[in-house]
Length: 215
Ligand SMILES: C[S@@+](CC[C@H](N)C(=O)[O-])C[C@H]1O[C@@H](n2cnc3c(N)ncnc32)[C@H](O)[C@@H]1O
Image 1: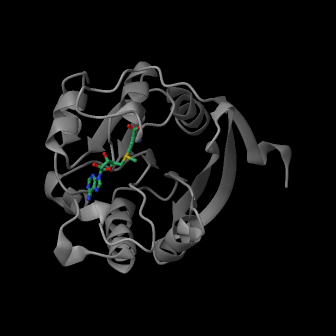
Image 2: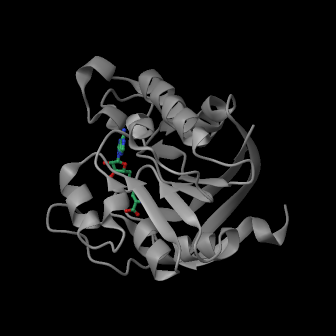
């Protein structure tokens, strides 16, 4: 492995979360600065289909790029849209419905999808709707959503996904492997980088960035 496979980024969350949400789903702002600096330029259109607390979109505006995002929880959507200059480009819906919105072709896609353990039933991509319970349906929907994402990408557009395998006691979920597998139909993996957090949380020393281009 080459040195560039490993990136050092401080674990520091710069923006306080809203009152209704902890910081658990957020990634450090500095990770998005690293991605945007290395894979986009001023004026580029940046898309995040799982916007969450909007970290990627806030940094996109800070760096003079143009954000587009989807988040299906209305409270998070309102909190993020309320702080964006380009708030009309923030959508509150299931990312699977992105083709309803006439979105432009993007120059870079960044995604931190919600994680699921394979032994559990609650499917975070459907807000826990019991009709869609289970890991298989989670992976299938992930494949469907990223299939839609590929239609918004040019041949040269990178897709960068933040993902982690999950170790919960003796139970292991090979999420990275399973997502790469499900994306294989529409994407070719081009790279993988390990982000080592400086001053890590003891239970979370690193994360993984997976790089793809569309087939
Ligand atoms: C891990 S969080 C993203 C965190 C974000 N990168 C940040 O730093 O704030 C994943 C987000 O995806 C949202 N989500 C889950 N399923 C979704 C779906 N089907 N469509 C759109 N958003 C969804 C969740 O509500 C959650 O806010």
